[in-house]
Image (cartoon, rainbow, N blue to C red; front, side):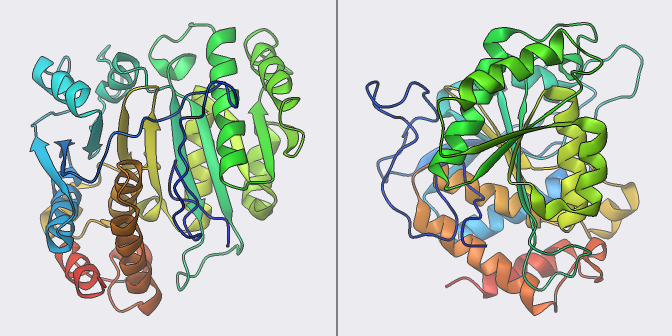
Length: 361
């Protein structure tokens, strides 16, 4: 697992070297996340959200305080049944450029739009990244799973406009992001997931963009797979995949499937990024709000959001704090003494938090 990466900035297991994802204009054409930090404490917008959100965001706050991490939170109450994001929340994210959020419940049907989708479009968070990997000590059906699912986040059916087309601009942008991510994180292969055999115009355009970008990265193997076959291959031989780039709707399905194979949605970190802003949250959306009983018993799994907050720390240029947090979480999982129900245990959220804090170096 030497090349696994929780981070959009660096590989996880390698020493934290000082390169940036903001290339010079003469060397790379894609601008990624800015380098906003100089070591000073940073403000982060915090949205606890619905369901298990307040439990798992509180877990992050506790661990950050125990680590004396150089971040402080501006907390806002936002719920999925609101008509829109309050203006002051959007202003806070634009000011701080970074947000950590719990899940927001999306009403099914009824014409109510998803606040999660509206936030991505408002901030142009065009790339969703979910890292699905095996955690040492956590038994799963498949081994050597280390998949990064990168999905276009702003258009297509999943964007809230069910007949919106896929554009050349957004297709090229997400393809460039995927290949640049693979290049900078020592990944060997990028697989485009599509349904171009049926969606000939929209997915055909997406594939055309991926193929064009692939020619600029000769050191990275490029492949394509129809989404039907992709799902079958994921559940039968997931270790064959490395970086996967997808249109919006398929990406959500692929990411949740890969997460379930690698250990469950409760342990998979993720982020949504654009040219100017980044929002970190639980990587796979299935179960990120949770059941009422889980909330009442306070037994939500905080691991996914803890690892997402480690991604956030690395994005803020605090790699040593990110390493400490990731190491502590992996120790707790490996020891197996303190696990929530979804991982085969019966621990509460607070018991997991206490165990992580006890394992901090």
